[in-house]
Image 1 (cartoon, protein in one colour):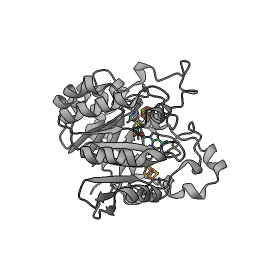
Image 2: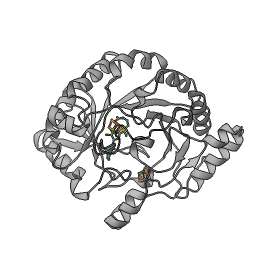
Image 3: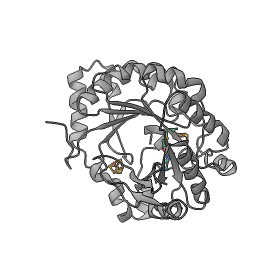
Image 4: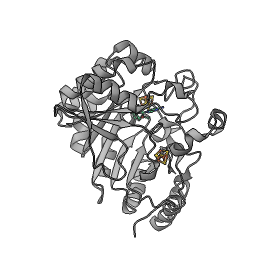
Length: 339
Ligand code: SAM
Ligand code: SF4
Ligand code: SF4
């Protein structure tokens, strides 16, 4: 019998955050005022080695997580990341190996990633307006650099790409149609993500969330959409296709239409903790037992215990919490466990 949590949700996906560092400072994720020169990132010895990540992944895949995604922080900042890709792609039972990246370093890495067995890529790009984009990444990159990464990925055969765009009311909402049109024409799948209250650093306010229903209406006015039915269990994006047959978009509406009931994701942090929710307040430490010589069976028992005890459904209860209670909840940060 497959591993299930307290709400009978199976374990299907593993997201591995390979570093807590990033070359961007998106204010909704790693605000530059906090993540400055004085900020203490994890020291190298605390990070899981590629061998340690691969061993834990092998165990977690055996428990059902057939889809694996590398994320961060910015995964391309982890030195020789393609070696980890090669190690993971050789594991039995991994049906899908993907990466989420801001694409800044992609042109120099893409061929090695492809050769190592990376199957799919998600690239984050919130807008095509250079000024707005700089505001949304802490002034670290122009749109041109990300587009170079996208073109390099296309040339290496990663098509269609998924493109993630966080939407913030009053920041990039006036640029969504242009973004949708661009990716429709290039045949990639754009996914709009409602701005979320991950972590405690981004000073999230409900007023800054543009509900997915409004996003769909904005795009539909210019380029008519129709819903795609038949999504698989555990799929987080609601899908719409263009009525003219020219591709599709996705909406990740974790604020206005939570999908906890079908959430099948486990997250592994750079220093070897597992988290059963993006909004978790604490994780379960696997690194210490691992480095103390625990057997695969012992590690598996810890992982089974964590998933078996899982009752997370934060997005479903978010709106019942007062802003005060939400602010006091000490959540793990997005850059720490990936999107
Ligand atoms: N650095 C990589 C990147 O940006 O693609 C991978 C890690 S990043 C944490 C993963 C995804 O989370 C990105 O697509 C990013 O836009 C999204 N994200 C970060 N903070 C968010 C927030 N507060 N609300 C919604 N999405 C967020
Ligand atoms: Fe870095 Fe990605 Fe977070 Fe932006 S969203 S700060 S690129 S980890
Ligand atoms: Fe999954 Fe937690 Fe997000 Fe709900 S709030 S969908 S349980 S990660």
